[in-house]
Length: 407
Image 1 (cartoon, rainbow, N blue to C red):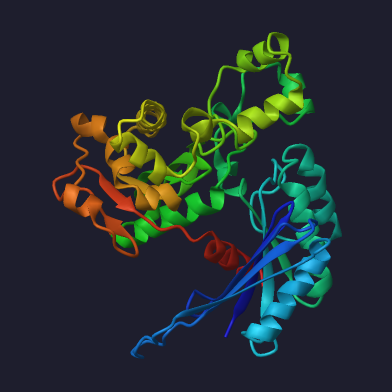
Image 2 (image 1 turned 45 degrees about the horizontal axis):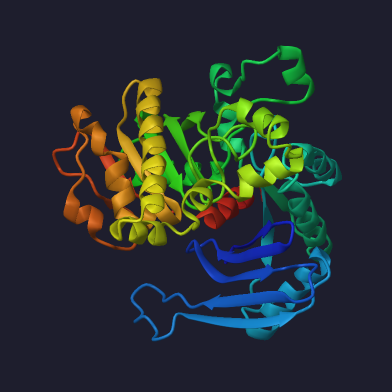
């Protein structure tokens, strides 16, 4: 059995998954939150997957929850090891052949999964200037993980890597070139692991060659992005130098006139850090409707709440704008996929996002769209000129695949 441990480390969290790569299923998953605070939350879930032909057991998952003080990521990794030892599966019986680390920002340096050595670690830390909220936590997780698993290869998988195929016209901002080069200002794109996984899964589901498909992938969760994928290559994406640009998100504004930042500093007298907090943590659906959860937004729309209705309309308006733009950039589209929490579960969002594209022959089947089923499914009509799919994403599996490819 080939087993890969996937670590997704944030500034105050450590998410992990132990993947059985023979069956491509998780043996266990866990989340440690509030690292460095007075009390940290620990959740460790052991997965029970039935073998082919074996009746499914009554209880598939067992989650063990606890709390304790965890000072830093080194201690968090030790707590993770304790969870495996106490609740299983035993790492001695399922030793990882590799550890895959999710890293948000790889800049222009990293365009593929990369074996981590001291120099790579230094380079990831240096890129914290571009991702101050994300890369420092990843570095802390990498260092702790390398100390705990010193005898297996560690692989960095970058959110930005899939978008390294963007053409210069797509990644270049129209500002002074020397300033842009000096400060590494360009579009990098994010959610690349998800966009890669979903576009490949869509091609496999349709039994069509990936290199012959023009695809649009909507990754709609609390963070949201859309990518145009031509022949398996990212050619346009909505997020930019940071994950702030693009679609309306849970707490992020998405696209906004840059002069708004200057106006807020000059007229509202907000400091740069306050504007950063406003646009990243207090805007989007939270800023418009006072809530993040799309289910609550839709309930508010049904109840006739003005704020919820406006927030939903703004959200959909941006989705339609990007769908139209990316169809134009691709010169047509064969497949449109929806993924992540909102994309996979909010039927009304999917229907409204594509409602104005009927003139292109794109048709959503109401019953298929409303039906809730596991796995990949088609929600377009049989007569639709474009296949519209719901594709559950699995970023942990994609990270594990890429990590395993380097062992």
